[in-house]
Amino acid sequence: MSEREAAGRMVRLCHLYPDLMNLYGDRGNVIALAQRCRWRGLGVEVTAVGLGDRPELAAYDIVFMGGGQDREQELICHDFETVKGHSLGEAVEDGVALLAICGAYQLLGRYYLTSAGVQMPGLGILDAWTEAGRRRMIGNAVVESDLFTPPRTLVGFENHSGRTHLGSKARPLGRVLKGYGNNGEDGQEGLVYRNSVGTYLHGSVLPKNPWLTDWLIERALRRRYGEAALRPLDDRLEEVAHRAAVRRAGG
Image (tube, rainbow, N blue to C red; front, side, top):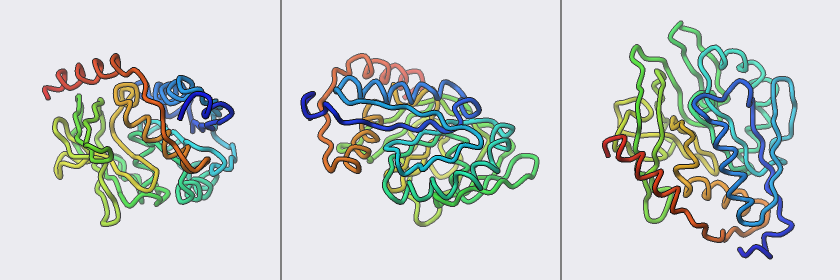
């Protein structure tokens, strides 16, 4: 898609709970999505959606929600379930591109059982469930993902005690090369469903993995406009940052 073809096209991005769910620089994912759209001549409209707001989420092209600690998750849980849950479920089934990080990823599943024994209901959009473990899984991670052709690595920082397990309908985002992933046991990281991605990779994940950023933008454009051939960008700096993160993880 040339700049002339991109002119007049708008990407509508919804940032859910930006004041509460923003661990480890997760807001940087919104910045990366918006900037890579602008570099291609696409218009971008970013809307912050907080507690009590009742948006029609299917009207957006990309929805992002970051991570939070148990306290923040408990604060938004009722609102997320009763106010926004139905709308988000409809949006996901309609093909809206979604990126959910850590705590958001957990709440999109069936439930999250905290270390205090409190079971927070999830939206059940993703075929997964999470239970807190005794040991935190912390460190730099490297994941190989076949979401791309050919497969690419994804890098990020993980810090979670939740053990997420995928159901039979779930597809993992990738295979763990370094780090823990979903639960530190089965070698899987994240989840992909339709145009939705859930992952434990913080840091922010998108600036160091531009191919994942572009995957989300492509899905958004294809849903809205029917085609999404993105013009290549000069990603030399992003590639350097990615390789540095791989080395830091010991990969």
